[in-house]
Length: 157
Image (cartoon, rainbow, N blue to C red; front, side, top):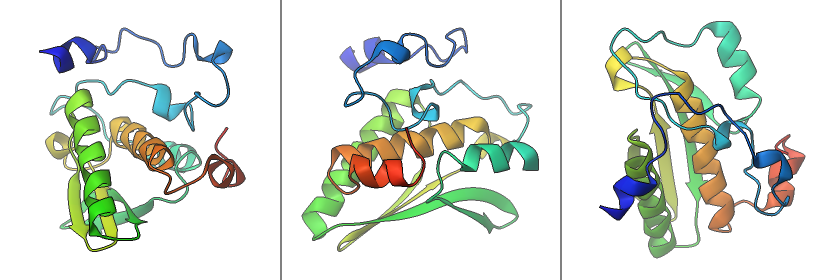
C-alpha cells in the first residue's frame, strides 16, 4: 500500500519539473526527463517521431536505439564488478518500474545488466521510454556505476 501512495500522478496533470529549479544540485535529477512522471499510455497513444527521438536522445546519450521484430527499443548495458552488484541494480530498476507502472526487459548476467525500454501497448517508443531511460541512468548514478561528473561530461545537468 505504501508504494501506491508514492506513485506519481500518471494522468499527466503534473507538469514536468515544477519545484526542481530550487533543488540543491546534488539531489537534482540527472536530466529534465528523469524529473517527469511516466504517464499512463493507451493503445492509441502516438509513438515518438524521428524529430522527437533526436531531441530526447540528447538527454540519454548512452542508450542505443535497437529494432527487434520491427519494434523500436532503447537499450543500455550497465557493468558491475560481480553478480551481486548486478542483481542489486536489477532490483533497483525493478522497483523503479513498479513505482512508475512501466516495465522494461531486464537481462542480468555476471557483471552486467542490460535494460531495454519500449512501450508494449504501441509496439514502439513513447516519451515514457526516454523518461524511464533517464530515471534508470539516475539509479546507476545512485548505485555508484556512473559518477555525477561522468554524467555531466556527457551533457546531463
